[in-house]
Amino acid sequence: MQANAASGIAVHDDCKLKFLELKAKRTFRFIVFKIEEKQVIVEKLGEPAESYEDFAASLPDDECRYAVYDYDFVTVENCQKSRIFFIAWCPDTAKVRSKMIYASSKDRFKRELDGIQVELQATDPTEMGLDVFKSRAN
Image (cartoon, rainbow, N blue to C red; front, side):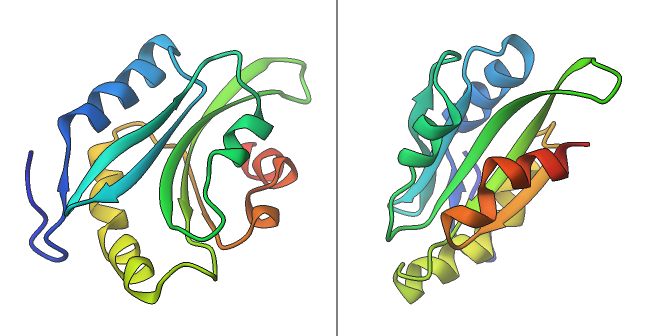
């Protein structure tokens, strides 16, 4: 576990291990991360059978989170593909201090997760809707 000098936030090893499982074995559909007591920890793991709706429902209305989502789609040529999305969830209603901590730690945390293909920043659900995933995946 290494601390980040800029924001003093550490990343729990579990975050990287679970991300690698999602990436390599597709063990999870999504992972939700939260910052707790100055470190990023895994808050929720979504089973492969869970839907986008389950994922969206696991993000709190008034608190920031980081999340990773394994998005499956079919290309114009009819190929099955998937993209790993990193979502920085920062609703307008979250506390200012929380928004600052999440914002200042995001790039450092994202670097720990090797294999992120698309990044989304969302302040409300419409900014990370399935249509957004679709348009950013190609």
